[in-house]
Image (cartoon, rainbow, N blue to C red; front, side):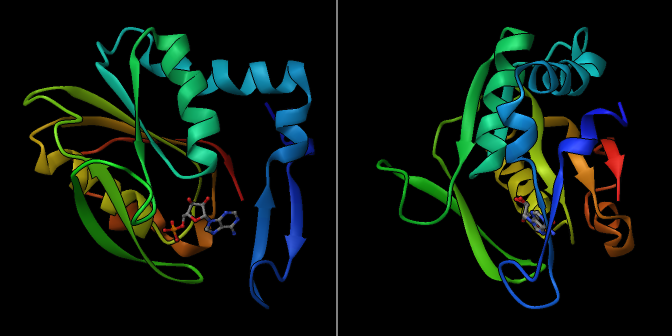
Length: 172
Ligand code: AMP
């Protein structure tokens, strides 16, 4: 697994001074590494009876859609405000480098749906927390949250509900 993450590039001072951006695009570009990453993200959930994957814009779409295909389930996008065309639920949150909000279409989940949250990086945890709140507002059950990279020094997982198990492949 550590070989895989040789292809994660640190980009200093992006998008703001002081932020070290974890860029997964070199990993996505390498077919074998990309396949191994998706396999590793999906593996703990193969028998978890997941009904849908919830992916966070934008890199969570790349990973989440591939994980959904691997699990044989559908995909729900959590998008930045104003991008989804139909009626949405919205949740505001704070980011490592700013504030934002996420939306999902109303009716994305049925009550009791078992949902897996997927994103590339967990930093402060605010984004993932908002996504979990959106799924719960539609009475879905978030059975786990999985990330390629966790920035341990920001303690993001502490901001997530305690009953959502977190999986991370690389701790940075
Ligand atoms: P947070 O809400 O602080 O956990 O931020 C997580 C979201 O912002 C994820 O969608 C990440 O893709 C992105 N993000 C935050 N910090 C970084 C970082 N240092 N490198 C790459 N992506 C980041």
